[in-house]
Length: 253
Image 1 (tube, rainbow, N blue to C red):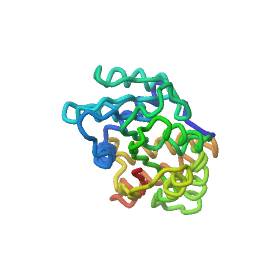
Image 2 (tube, rainbow, N blue to C red):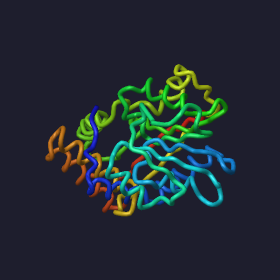
Image 3 (cartoon, helix red, strand yellow):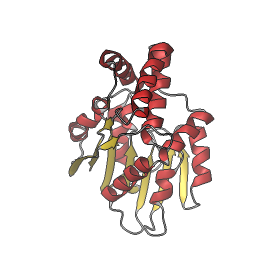
Image 4 (tube, rainbow, N blue to C red):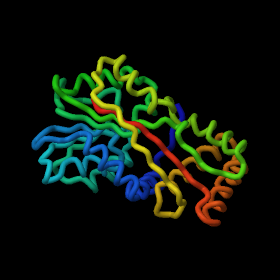
């Protein structure tokens, strides 16, 4: 499995991404799919720096939220962000130190595509959900990531390398069948398209470009990665010709 080293600077950059309008819209979409009833218990898997559990455990929902994440730097930021109504645990998605049937609901956003032991992780999700529990799982098919660039061949090489940043780069499209084979009843599968046409510093596309550039620089070479990024930024500066289209899919079970 390839992954990022989430040190303090990487966490800060990801937090900036979480605060873009696109990321806020995505979290609102996920919460709407959960349809939390008052007083329910909610598990946030891979909670990162805490935006999701903090927004789940609001006064309006009266939900009790627990967030888990494997990264201690992320959890430290989450503790600063979340109220005392949110419990935070260091754990990965394959094993939680909680009893069976603990949660009414669970949510996971772009987590399972990074997990080698996907079958075990989904079995653990089933274990901790109540018999009538439900979950929203949101994953990406990275084939749906499109960058309009001057050099199509170079872009293809860059995105082929980017596929290696996670274990299951097509999970967004495969998710429904994967969940069904793990014993879940899939009630709804919905595509959530994110269309991004600008690369300004306060945009989702800007931060995503930085993550792609960093990974590709390490695995293909900085010269190719920089030339690709410079090309996209140049097109954007000349009037928004650099269009980015990301079509993640989410499934509610």
